[in-house]
Length: 246
Image 1 (tube, helix red, strand yellow):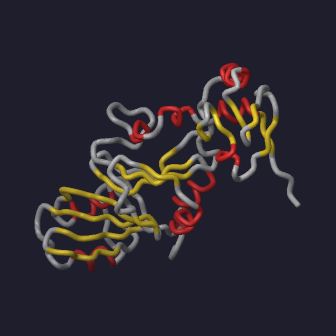
Image 2 (cartoon, rainbow, N blue to C red):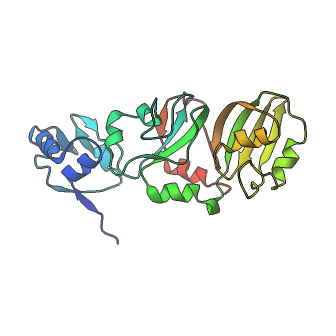
């Protein structure tokens, strides 16, 4: 049987963004940190990283934040950027301030541009991130598209052909599924993630995307009750759904 890993309490809480190790020691001495209701007075103690630790370990009576291995689904609103450093509102500003000090840090799984809304995944698990975005994973993404001009009728065949070239590139796109909803609305499902791909695909055919919203990653749908700007911790079933059908 594999032994349960353990970690120093001050290291764990510092990596979760609760403060420096010295500050964590101060919290312990003040009686603010408890495990199963019992005070932990020495932040240098080692504690077992049990799966239910986040529910059993409290600071000032509140359960600690999720442990490393965190994966989130976020309903990205328009006008925010998937970046740590760019100017203007950032997706990380939609999360608790303390989460921006986590180590390992949370990162977006791919990106949605500033003017695209919808389902965005974030994780501090580098292996999971790369597993999702790796081309061989074949994780599809579905976008709801609003167009400036009506569909001509031949777009689905062109996108599915695997021959469409984007300006400035030297290899064609992989086949993309287009499902028309009405004259100016459709859904496109793709497995690549080239720069501004959906917008550039329609531009190559003489049309212009006026609104773009991602509502599915793999087999995971954006929950209808997850409002723009809100997030939710993903369950193991949610993560498995991402790879469903890949």
